[in-house]
Length: 296
Image 1 (cartoon, rainbow, N blue to C red):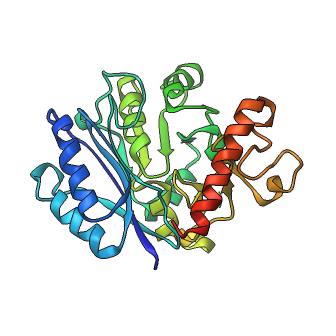
Image 2: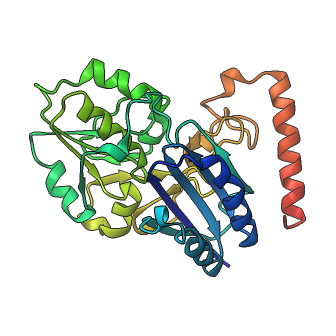
């Protein structure tokens, strides 16, 4: 049976975020959900999976808290378990930029719905920026988008300082997987003096859901941080796998190279493979096969 996968976030003051950890943990376990919830003083960020009725029951409980009553949820499906377990974690930020003065709840850029996105990003005055990391951009992005070539979101402010100028780039449009990184990125740009900042509401996932492939300006696939690895137009399952050694997305062609060994390494990490790590990965791969044989 297919699982329903829901993603949601909200920037809102949560002074009791530590106390919420046990509450949400219990509610998820009660509904047998898997996935990850991140809680911080600045808000909540979650991706959860389970049967549709149990996901709906959890969301109904969550929305009993007035702070989460209007939370927006993105829904997709998975033909196999999207997550191995449940994690409810306390963090300093729900998406890590590393600048405590950036507060999206105090103001962000202008939201642009997927149906209006194509018109915006084809404006010659727009500087289109992909706020995701380099390994995500490599496998799919919008045509003409600038790749900041960041390894982590923490590097985004440095990219802005080195490559963007409000006088030269008066109109900025940004996008990310689900929208959360753009919330912080747009708040940061506004603080830096950029007056026209736009971002894709619902992120790439909402665009791929709403915009037909024949009208799309997206190329490639969209990387996810779960077992599905990538999605395509219509939120159909993509063609990429993930290296169990380093977590990097890998294509079918890369799996045919001598550098790829299932569960051990791939072209992106083979140079850093030590005998100790190889043995550790072999043991993990063995345990994984045992779990699959037992139907776990």
